[in-house]
Image 1 (cartoon, rainbow, N blue to C red):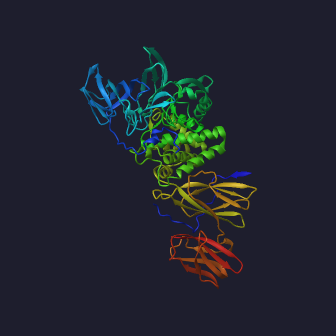
Image 2 (cartoon, one colour):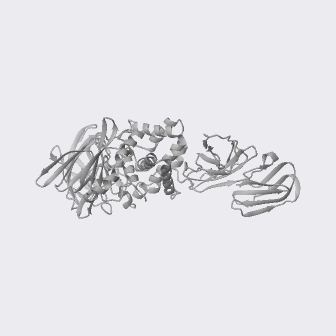
Image 3 (cartoon, rainbow, N blue to C red):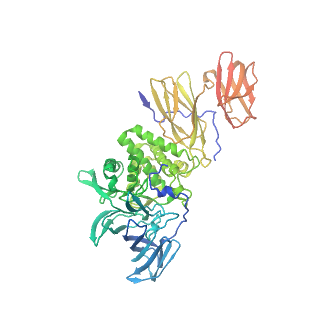
Length: 639
């Protein structure tokens, strides 16, 4: 029988107080891993316009790494202007730009296309330009945004633009503050091939040996989530049922040679769509579709309404689908906050395991994330260098630690508050189909839980590393448990992680889990239980991301003998007070590892002993006092 106590303890702070000095496996796209050392500078491109709509037309031959097309950009001016700029890679050429059907001048310098309108437009004016372009999309060091490869003997073209690759194949604003309100994508290619893209397939028109595919998407979209893929796809549809009269198409574009083998693996998608819709909010693009397009990377990329997939296991299918809520519907408002995309998608993998395979599978997945996060003891979830792609998409930090933080939040505030807060975050009209930053999520979780979470977010998102714990325990004749929890940190950026620490107590017949609100290192708790303890475990179910954890039994100086050790922590002199005279035959001091460091004066009767510890290094020691009939030990903390 297992009993659970909710924070059942008497936080009677003893004299013992330790003063601490304050001080892959990537699921998403290969591009996030491939060019990890590339450097990008922040941009102010396009800050004076808001793109309302973009019509994109491409001519694609899958056998050639080449793009040709044009885009009609409809924009609203945010201030009075006569020119504006777009992101456009230097390897491409802007053949001509039309404004009201007239050619206008432009300057293409570096990766910036400056468009001169020839007139001045007032603020809040709606207008448009059409840009004709072509070239070889050579990315930073290789082809990132626009890729060509072969599967078997068949050629394929696919795009993958996160984070900075959209400009490598069409003129755009690839910032994280202006979503395009809607798009139409037209792809012309040889009739032997099919084109996959965002939204709904409206038409496929054949003419002179070519086909033109028209995809329409009527939801706001970030530039990096726009995508096309062209090859000899074979396709089929499945359907997720969100209610009795509401279903969403799951459209799958697969390489013909993999078609039959992949269908059984993809079948779980409809169940995942239904589960995530019940757990959070309805699939955000249910009026269009969800789907997969096979592509030439080993991972996956969450293009809006159609993830591009190179692997097909349960985890990655769940991960890329999860991004439709966390990353596409609500997108991180800065690459510093990428954990709002990747941390959530990683954690929803764990939730999928919990729902479909049980809580033990959830725990195993969380433990795997912990293992990865612990590999970066000096890293923060919050990205400190957005010019480095490898740092943005750190598997240990943005993914595993981000997911671990969400697991910890769930355990710290409880299931009801956690899921309610996340649902409210997704339902927030100021965030829906837009951008969010960390403080937006924090506000919703605080409102749902009634708890102030500043310390948690400061430590776990913006701070670095994780805690290491040492737990000492004893039990007196009245079965009162005495606990002392010590904490160190893996990085000096966090002075102390304030956490509710689960402690399991068992004896083979009964076990109890108590929750201790740990506010400072060296804090002591007294907890009455109704059985003799044999085993004590600190956080056995991984509620807390933690490093080394040590649990030790200590026979503390017995209160019934009226023995008192003070001061503790100690700087120089320490004293033992006794109610009656005792004969001390031996007094020794040991390290926690059991190495003796000092033997003190002994061999006399007294009720008061004083000894000098000023020569000892800072740390934790065990004092052993031997009388005629008993041996007492006590933890000493040297400051």
